Length: 310
Image (cartoon, rainbow, N blue to C red; front, side, top):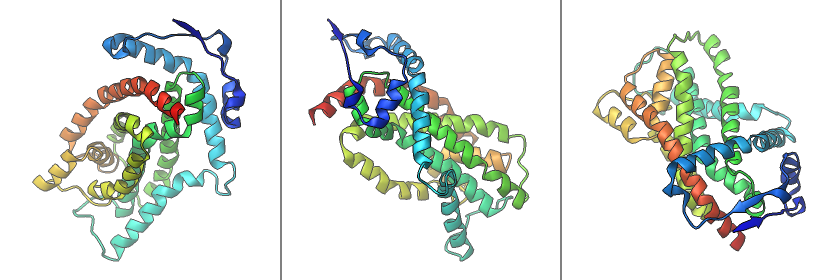
């Protein structure tokens, strides 16, 4: 069955209409073919279509990325400083608590404790944003998703672009920190770059697995917000991960810990005792991300139907 879809921009919020107006797509000529068969029955075709939609939506993704970037800092006096503020504020709090003796790092390290915590906070903040990104982009663009047919993978491109942008901005904090505390990274810091990319893919994959139920029920997002502080405490960010059985077990059982710990160790110490869990999570990051993409694509029609029902 062939169906011709036409959607006017007046049905959408003004900010979404402006972005969509720049797409070089004639919606009146769009033809959608509906098939009773599920895409999951043909995995190769499924991922070929996902790749094609990523390419088809790259112009829209770029426009939305620029729109979100301007909107984020448009009416703020501090501008891009808000990208630095979360890791700086969290680091300042935990450094103060460490100095007054509330907690200790838990082991001997060769670098300054402030730099150690700051690096961990930057990686943790990136992991959290990547984990929450799939639900965030769907929730923020509900009107656009429910009223217009477009490559939904463009929203993931926007979310990933914002995460990489924020990570690059925050990494600039490490330059004055390294200079102030005389920290000299070794050559292994180069391996931390692909590890950070794999960490983002891994966290995004986890987020896409939760996205279908999280987009339909706000309880999931609220529970995640409540659980995040406890998850951070369980992750060796403000303290040194132990190399004994208990410390190793804490890293192995925590999905956020292996890549964060390994990447920070390589940045600051040029070595690590957590190569095995880090490399294991790295190996499953891309397959998990691809599986998450499949879940995202298959669940979107159901989510759209439920959105239109409310």
